[in-house]
Image 1 (spheres, rainbow over the protein chains, first blue to last red):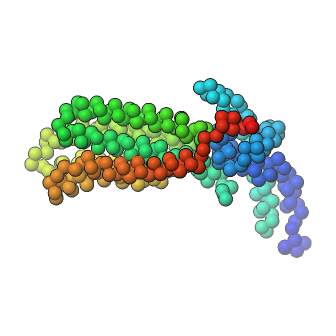
Image 2: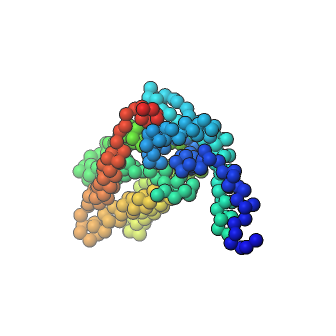
Length: 109
Length: 216
């Protein structure tokens, strides 16, 4: 095998890439949620610069995958939607990072 | 574009909580409060009354600060709880602040003792301003580091300057301008805070209640 030829064995992690996380907007959402304990919808919208509808739809997908927990609470009678990463979401995000790192490393050889 | 570096993302998210200018205004008001205290003291108001006004105004500023964060910042920027690493840094900054207040009290008490022993020993009189400068610069530098807010380095200098500036003016011009020496840096902080707050209000308009909950 030539040096420049991509070794398919090295690209095995590519098949394991989580497609739910791989979408850029969802990756950004998970990146933000991974560095905080919890944040509300507005904070996440301001940080990610996603539109309300876009963020809402991505959060629904992440919630359906079990990666994000969405809690409704009332603070002084004002409703607040609190978002946080679930344990499953944190593990999936870590695994995604590991897999992507492997894929990118193998591509750079 | 935001780099996908988790440390940077966390830092950016945390630093965004200082974009509202409320901290700047609060610190400016605290320094202005010292200027008011100096002005009252210079105009013959009793120490007790001056101290009472100082403490009352400081308490009002703290309450206004909390109310502004609650009523202006959170409804516009959103609510966030940071992770354990950041919480530890915030705790360190709180401890630094408490230590600074305690150190300030010790210096304040020491000043009375020094004044009574300083006759004929002018070098002792330099201890108080030196302690003020060191305390301001060290505390604000630690806060700037722990809170990731670089403006606080500048504010450390602004807090430190008035006392030596006042001493220099007294030495060379023979006039007591401590109130002005405190009011000028306070005005700089207030101006920075006002600009930041105006920008914040423009960039983060108040959205309808349901928007903050992700519903249309």
